[in-house]
Length: 211
Image 1 (tube, rainbow, N blue to C red):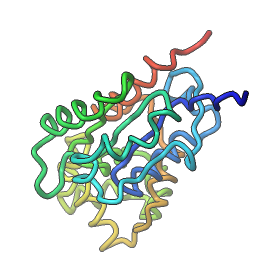
Image 2: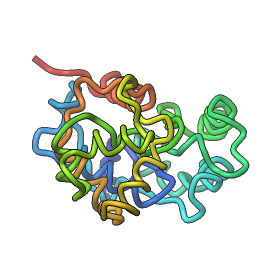
Image 3: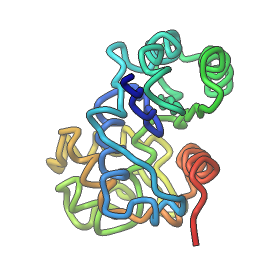
Image 4: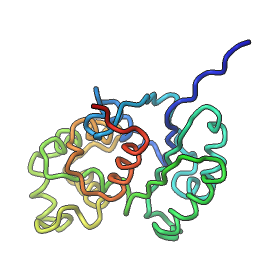
């Protein structure tokens, strides 16, 4: 009798291609688990990522259906979407609705709601940001002068507007590949973003570090 294939570790449902590229960058690093301070687990972008065809509203409304084909092939599910989109009910309502939907079929899952949106993960006062975005090295000063990122705050108040300013005025890369390059290079150990830390904490719980 043919034995069933072993179930894969985690399926990631993401709202768009930019999130997919960010995941590819983080989880495609050599020994990526060491940066995240968790144990190793398998990640294959071709088998372990679903990009929702209807973006954030589709993930919000149909996460359970989108994950349904993977209930037998994967042990755990992570759902990722932005909090800011037209018609959004807010991060708390998104978290509750998606968690309730996914919990009907999955015992182990996480819902990661990025506040306000993925661009919040881009920003660090770090030269790797300029290299990844292909923008001027003094991007921090540029954004301070344009009032997109005041010097006394750790992140731009509107992360997407800050990125769009660099794209419009300073030819920053408009492709989703910029998110992958950024995730391949920036430090994650001191990131204070709540959604990113929630993702890391869940991965550590599922895959504890080994001595």
